[in-house]
Length: 256
Image (tube, rainbow, N blue to C red):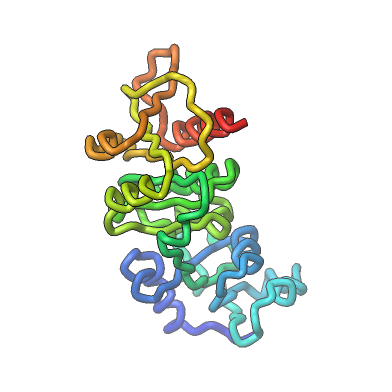
């Protein structure tokens, strides 16, 4: 294992920005649990970075990671603070190369989630985690969604990012219409939509809109049906990630 240099840390700090992640085709994960998820996922880990103190307590960490020795780096506490944006940086981190799915890779997966302009990273991460729980076959994001490789998204997803296929569409509405042509039923979540029971149909695209604005009219017009979550309280609305989970549960119940 070789010590990481200040210059290398400075380069890796660019991964905290979307532009840096795009240009390097990589992202940073921090913390033992997420690093273990990354190393065991089959994704390409290009850097495994940890403190000497952690290795003294867990000497088997490097061997169990499966990461080749030439990709293993030790880091000093001072450089760790420069690398991380967290107030208390965890003693281990990894740089992971992005895995890309083409939208055609999702054509025989179901159900699918189509997310329009989700801006909050905590919400998106929770939705990715929820999607895995309910067995969603893949997630399609609009270009205006928060970057799925944003570090806050990664933490909220709790490792599900490595197991749920995610792609970003340059033409979300057009691609959704194409999937409709492939035999998928498009169900659009809308506060003013139908509260009637869903019919059983495994080939479903569940479409969710942004936290602030919901779905644009063109998605509602394209949909085969709309879905509203009935409630009895006085709250104005539900958090989008909560709505997403309830919507997936309703789909699951319809198919059971």
